[in-house]
Length: 81
Length: 81
Length: 153
Length: 153
Image (cartoon, rainbow over all chains, first blue to last red):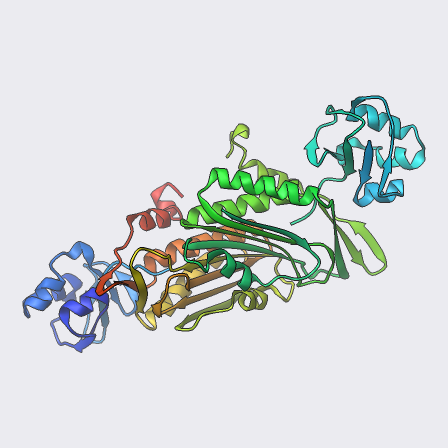
């Protein structure tokens, strides 16, 4: 799967995107896995109330199922307009 | 007083404006007087539900008092915008 | 509050009007409305007549009322008169505020009141036939929404 | 329904956009909203980041929803990205309809949903300090008004 990061999530993790292979599961499980990868990830995902998720460019909740071909994006609540 | 006519009121009466001297009273009395002046006026004021009135450039009702220095305008319900 | 009210025969430039209202960064939101002559079967020209001086005075009263109801930083109203062709613009109401909901509400309020209070009349030319457009009862209903005394606003 | 959705660094010309929507005389009413960078103490630059492709897709979904709710003839959304200065325009939403209340409602609906759904993020530069703008809870409340399941719409 491809992971994308935007705004301060991107800055905390220190990259725009990355490829990753994880067992199929839901978004919450992916976040738990990412938090185990190091302090940058742990910091970015410390407060999940401040994190929003899109799978294949649709807003989803933390319980959304994800698979190996999905594009998963993490970002703060949006502030456009 | 000066009388002004707009849109089809102007067309039925056949003039834009005229000076007139009538006893002090209200708009309804003025209209009654105008209707007595001839068939053009009678036609213009035949259906008062289709007539709107302004005195000194403010919308008023038929019971508004008017005097010799007033500007009184008669017109159909407005259709701008 | 910046207020601009103009009655004119010429077209207007919406981009310029909105930049004049909000280009200084004092307001974050501008809601605008433009009314256009609709293309209709046989309609060749729509001609607008108005009551000079009262038009400006009445619109100024409506703008003052809008400024009392909502926190606005500026209002521009431009209304054209004279002959217009299908597709041409008739009216612009642009409202600037620091709050978008105030800008939207005041813009809609002004349009509803303009339609029922500002002394303009439209005459349609269809072929050789000329007739005056009838006032729409729906416009009265729309304006009444804003009147607290009717209990529906 | 004519639909135009553009994400761009350049400014836009509101007059051109509205003429493109309504200059053909098919719709009598265009409601527009422009959002501007507000002048604030120390604010030098507001920089907009977005999620390419998802932005356009999400806005297209919102426009489709608006077209389902109201009888619209056209919608144009232009959203700028990159660095912007106080007074500059950020966003345009223009909605054309044969009915002005539909145009106003759909324009406000689109702005409320854009603020809560379209993946844009604003970063403010104040002097040497950079920080990300926080999402406003009031924007969520505004969007909820349109959701019949909340019972307040």
